[in-house]
Amino acid sequence: MANFFHISDTADAMSRAAADFFVERAKTAISRNGRFTVSLSGGSTPEALFRLLAASPWQDGIDWQKVHIFWGDERCVPDDSPENNARMARQALLDHVPVPENQICRMNGSLPPEAGAALYDIRLREFFDWKMPVFDLILLGMGDDGHTASLFPHTPVLKEKHRWAKEVYVDKLDSWRITLTAPVIQSAACIAFLVAGEKKVAALKEVLHGDYRPEEFPSQLVARNRAEVHWFLDAAAGKAVD
Ligand code: 6PG
Image (cartoon, rainbow, N blue to C red; front, side, top):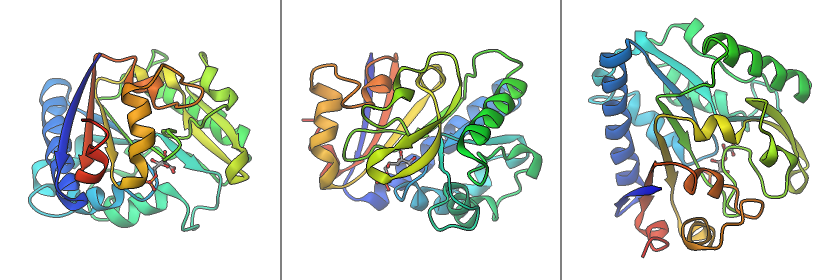
C-alpha cells in the first residue's frame, strides 16, 4: 500500500494541484483507452477543483467528448436542492464543458433510496459490461469522522460485497444516501482524496496511521487496501501526515 501525498500551502493551491493531476490522468486514459471514466466526489471541498477544471488552462487540456462522468455518492434530495452533489458539479463544471449529456451518469436522489441505488447499480453494470468497474479516477473527500463517499462509520453498507451502488441511512444526518460500495472504490485504477482543514486532522491521522478499524474510520477501506492512493491536502490537513 503506497500513499502519495501532495501537500499544498492553501486549499486553493491544493485544488490547483488536483486539477493538474485530473488533466494528466484524463489525457493518459484517453490516449490509452479512448475514454476517461471518472467518479466525482461531493460535499464542499471539490467545488473549487471543479471550477478550475471549467477554466483555462485546465478545460483546454481535456477532450471532454471522451469523458464519462459518474458520482461516488449522492444525497437523497431533490435535484434542485443545494445539498445535491450533481447540482453542484453541474453549476461548477458540467454546464461549462462539452461532456455529452448521455455521458453524464448521475445518481437519482429523487427516487426512493432503494430504487435510486438499484438503478445506479444496473447502469454501472451496463456501462462496464457487467465486469467489476475500474474507474480511471475516483475522486474522494473525507469527513471529520473518517467517512468517504457515503461509507459512514458503523453502517451496513461498509460490509457490502456484491452491490456496486447501495442506499444507506445515515443516523447522525437523519438522511438517506446512495453510495458506491467499497469493492468498486477499491478497484479503481486511481484514487485521489482531497482533504483540507484543521478539523480533518484527527480523523486523517487515524485513517493513515491508526489501528485498522474500518468500521470506525471507513476511509481505511480505501487507504489501506490499495497499491496507490493520492492525497491532495492543504497545510492544515497535511499535519496528519508527519
Ligand atoms: C458527500 C461527500 C462526502 C464528502 C465528505 C467531505 O456527499 O458529502 O461525498 O464523502 O466528501 O463529507 O465533505 P466536505 O468536502 O464538505 O468536507
